[in-house]
Structures are given as C-alpha cells and as structure tokens.
Amino acid sequence: MMTLARTLLAAGAAFGLAACATTPYAPAARADSAAKQPPAPQRILPRCETPDAPFECDRRAILAMQGEYAVSFHFDETVALAPGYAPKPDKDSGGHELVLLVEDSGTRIVLQHILVGASGMVIKHWRQDWQYETPAHWAYIGDQRFARRERAPDEIDGTWTQSVYEVHDGPRYAGIGRWNHRYGVSTWTSERTWRPLPRREYTTRDDYQLLNVENRHTITPTGWTHEQDNTKVMRAEGRDAVLVREFGFNDYRLVSGHDFGPGKRYWEETAPFWDAVRARWDAALAAPGLRLAYPADEEAFLTDVLARAEAFRKDRDLAAATAWIEAAFATRVAVEPQRTPAEGATAR
Image (cartoon, rainbow, N blue to C red; front, side):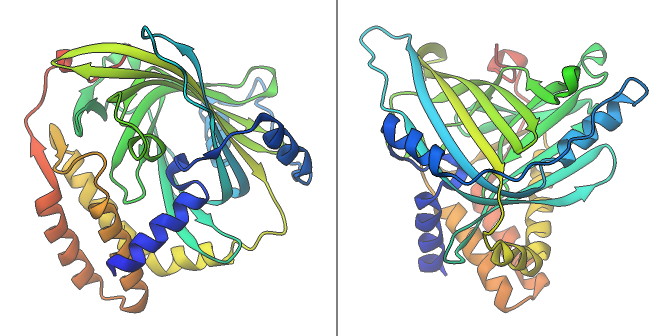
C-alpha cells in the first residue's frame, strides 16, 4: 500500500498536488500555453439583486465553485524584504480538478477537490469547508500547531469562515471574511492568517517557516479564481522577520471534453472512509490545541492515509478502516492545552 500511495503522491506532484508542484517558469511559454487553451464554457451567474438576502447571495457564490475545471497555479515572488534576498523564479503548475459538493446544511457547505489526470489517475486533493457566523474556529499558529480561536460578538455578523484541509483531511489554515456582491460580482476576502508552508516550498527550501496570507475568491462567468497575497516569514526564538512577498493566482476555468468519471467513481467508492477520517480530525480539532507529531516535510502519514483509502476501495470494511484510523492518529496527532493569544492565533 505504501508503494501505491507514494506513486499517487508523485503523480499528483506532476500536475499540481496541493497547488504546490512546480514546473520551470518561462513567461513566453506561459503566455503561449494560455493562448492555446480552448475557450472556457460560459455560464450565466445569478446576480445579487436588492431584494435578495445577503445570506442567500453568499450561498450561491460558494455553491458556484462546484464543477469540472482546468486549473492553473501561479506563484510569483514580487518584493524582497530581507537584505540580500533575491526573489526565486516563478512557479507554475496545473491540471484538471473536480470540485464536488460533500455537504450543504444551509450554514455549512463542504467542497471536495479531486485531481483527475488524462490517463485516469486520481488524487484526492484539498477540501474547503464554509461555515456561517461561527463563534470559534481553529487557527494555525506555527510549528505544526493549531489553536482554537474564540471570536468577539462584533466580529461574527455576516461572516463566513473558510477552513482549508490537506490531502489527508488534516487542518491547513482557516480564515474569516465577508462576501461582497457589488457590481454583480461575488468576491470573498479573508483577514490575514497564518499558514504552514505548502508542498511546493517545503520540498525545495528551508529558509522560512510560515506564511502570512490574505485570500480572495471571486466567482466568474468561466469559473472562479483564488488570489493570494503571501508574505513569507522567518520565525526563530519567538521572533518573526519577513523575507519576501509573493502573489499567488489559481485560476479554475470550466472545461468540457475531459473525462472526470474516474474522479467521481473514486469519491463514490471512498466517501465512507473519508467520512470517518473527517470525523476523527473533527474530534481532535475540538480540543483547545492540536499538534501534528511529525515534521512539516514528513509525508508518511499522508501517504499512509491515501494508501488506506485505496485499500478501502477493494475491501469496504468500515469497522476495520475506523480501527486503523484510530491507531494511526494515536501516534501522529497530539492534543494540547489552550495557547494564549500572544502565541499567534491571529496574523496581522
């Protein structure tokens, strides 16, 4: 199972696993590639008119992220902030991604991303959960740790919290923001939040420890976009110093003619397993604090969970799978006491 999971992970890196894999960047080549793309299918977006309740407008925008997409990931270091630092070359990758609705309970919407290669290779990708007016959520605070963040009553009204999860459904980052529907365009902008390094970075460098990020999601006639204002931060002995700013742009364009059937079948066959994995993570994240008991660049837990999902496709014994999940979490995930706000639950 481990060999299969590592093969899947390597294949995912080839076409953008976790929006982190990279290919060398050449501006002319990137422009040529964009010019050769077939026109994306157009859709008519429902406008948020004056009588509409903002809550319903927000929900329509989030649900519009479902679909079948050709996706491109672009990251460009723009402003060097540390003396002597030279910005790294831009990073580009892409692939085809299926975004499925997992849950819609009104105030909570869960969307699962699945990469689907031309050969039928399938990789479970990231997940995004949206919750309306939640009074608390988990937040990344650095060093493989997460803490519960309580919100003041005046911060809650009209907000949506987006929580983003890794390939194995572990926490990655969460942020709060409001949807804006002016001019007939739906855009959600987050507060600034801390993030761990993405795979495209921790597999290639070790000169910074975390990201300070503002996210923006916009729904378009051809799909949706995810813009990132990233600041790369060096943290040592309790002190932070900035290294460089980076612009990230992920473009999800509706596509026709690509076979997403393998991704849909994968989800049908593994959904009960991933339900159990999510439940176990939810239980851990309900604690005041959580620590991942392995280094940030260690992928054994991730590959183990992917391999167990593949095994579940062949033997759908949910009781056995749940027992395996419990045993795996016992050595990889640790509950911790609440950390103080001074320890960095909120990024500025």
